[in-house]
Image 1 (tube, rainbow, N blue to C red):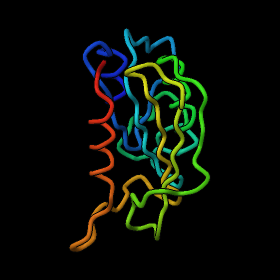
Image 2 (image 1 turned 120 degrees about the vertical axis):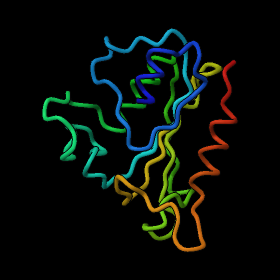
Image 3 (image 1 turned 30 degrees about the horizontal axis):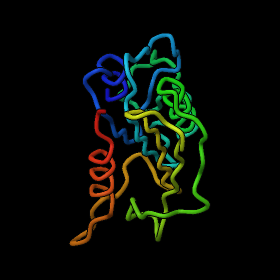
Length: 157
């Protein structure tokens, strides 16, 4: 839904953070009127919405859902919409977003050359599934603060 809103209301939306979401594979169906800051977060072992794309396999989705791009392809599509270029991936994990995956588990891929309002990042939770463990007992991950900080640091120009 976040990607649909970004496609349809790009003039109003500063940015979205999508957790294991999908965008349209057919780029003709998404023509944003302005850049939208995109943060895509996805577990590499997601079997419900596969990291590498394909079709939704969750039993509560209709069988006729169109195929969707994988996480990297999704951010590449949005980089194209936004006019962002020059992707770079950090050499190793720098965040602990999923408490079910021990240690630092998240690698960031960002497009380093983006217009104002058109930042695009992919946070890959290595070993993460569709539902990351964000809280465990009295401890919580960096997830919410990191996502909120990212969104607040990417306003509409």
